[in-house]
Structures are given as structure tokens and as C-alpha cells.
Length: 87
Image (cartoon, rainbow, N blue to C red; front, side, top):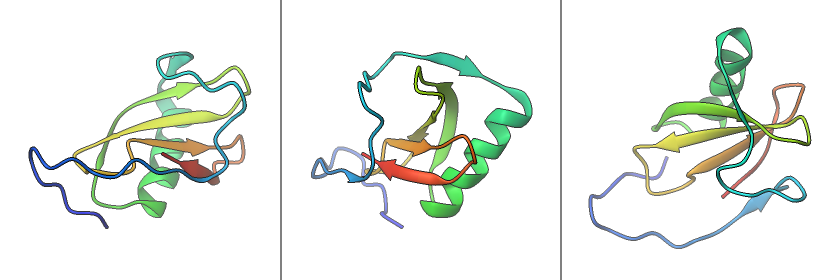
């Protein structure tokens, strides 16, 4: 867990696989069971934050938008609801 400190910048980094052609802000917001499964996977891998939305990307993967922590801000989950990367 990475504790959040208001106003404290964190180092930018990436781990795992970021979907090809990923563009922040692109995709379609999903809800219901799909969003719940993606959120559960994201928070199991990176606990301590709050996912405020889940977006399906053009690749079919999902981006969980994680707030309340310095890092990671975007957690990428594949179609099997397995975390594959973060930034």
C-alpha cells in the first residue's frame, strides 16, 4: 500500500503491461457486474484506494481509475479480470 499525502507528488512509473494504444480518457464507462469484478481485481492487487469508475478500452481490457492514493492512478485489468498493469 502506498499512503496518500495531500500535495505530495509521487514518482511516475509503470508496471506490467499497459494496453497498446492506451489514451487516458478514452473508452466507455461500464457499470454493474463487469465494473464490480474489475474493481475487486484492481483493489486486491493495489489496496488502499477507491475506484471511482471503470472504463472498457478498445482492446477489450478495462481501466480502473484509482483515487485516494499517490500511485497507481490507472490499474489495467484484462477480460478475465486479472490485473495486467498499472501506472
